[in-house]
Amino acid sequence: AHSPSAASMPRCMSTAFGGFKRHDIWNHWSCEEASSERRPSWNSTDDSANLFMSKACKSDGPSSWCSRFVLHPVSKRRLLWMLLGACMLAYDVVVMPLQLSGLMPEVMVMQFVVVTFWSADIIVNFLTGYYEDYRVELAPGMTARHYFKTWFLVDFSIVMFDFLSVAVGEMEDSNGVVRLIRGSRLPRLLRLFRLLRLLRVRSLIEIGNWIAGCLDSERHVVLFRVFTLIVGILVLNHFIACLWYLVGTEGELTWLTHQDMDTAHAYAAALHWSLTQFTPATQNLAPISFNERIVASAVVLIALITFSTFLGKMTSAMTQLLKLNAQRYSHESKLRRFFSENDVPENLAQPVWRLFRQQQRVDARQQRIGLSEICDLVS
Image 1 (cartoon, one colour):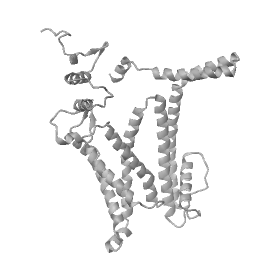
Image 2 (image 1 turned 60 degrees about the vertical axis):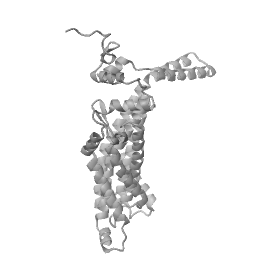
Image 3 (image 1 turned 90 degrees about the horizontal axis):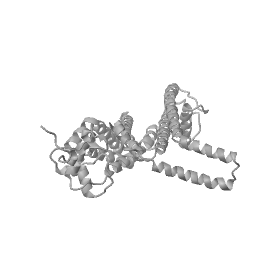
Image 4 (image 1 turned 180 degrees about the vertical axis):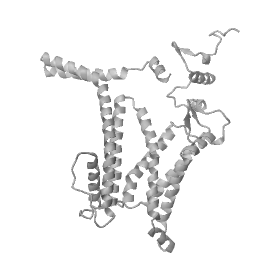
């Protein structure tokens, strides 16, 4: 048996490109590409190109009428829905602790809107593709099965507790059974179960990864990481401040009863107290009751671990940012030293500085990654 010549082999069977051997997954992609009528551009927005891309990503099997409704995990419609979910989750993260602690009354209209959105999100997740090895699974049956095995029970339980909370809040007090339910601990337990919404933080993680992937500069990625760390610390302190206020309302002798302040001032004082537990700062609030001392001790332990981790990540991010700018700083130092040693006048130095910084930006844009480096990354 003799091997076929390179000329007689189809284009999609060629496994060498530029001296590099391609993996089987790339050869499979080339075969699908060769069978199409034309090769679509990666940035193409043409319908036929998008149809080709969906066929290349879709798993083998018969198609159904609901296949047209399946969302690609990185499509614009999916990302738009995720951004809307991030807004809803941000609303929950900010408002939910305020409502649970009694700092803010419940707004039934917004609560109904949030519950309706997360109910629709369950249907959307049933029709959202997922990555499996090197390809995207877009078959409706497979996407529904994958979501049912992963996050369906968690999302469904959260929505059910939300519906119960809304139903109890909408009941009228004329019924004796309703008054008995509201007088019991059931409404508070339902509010506590709303904390399960924090499990949806995974959506924020997906959006954060997507934003980081869209950034075209490593410097911007580092700054984005720093921003997310700061936001995370602020959110944690927001929760602790609401907890500290809630503990202050339980009992006759607490830190809150010793202070003559309105609700907004009380939250600001609680937030100040929370921030001082993470940093070496001073404040004039001290725990008085037994419950307050237990909470204060737990917060100190949490702050010890959290702030150490936060400081380590911030130091790592700043070090990476300095390394990215090390070459530029070195060139600026040489240029500044040259101006100082040769007494270059200011009216001549400033145009040179502007030309130097412009050239630095041009050099940064012209840097390209070679094919050999990509092959080393994915091999």
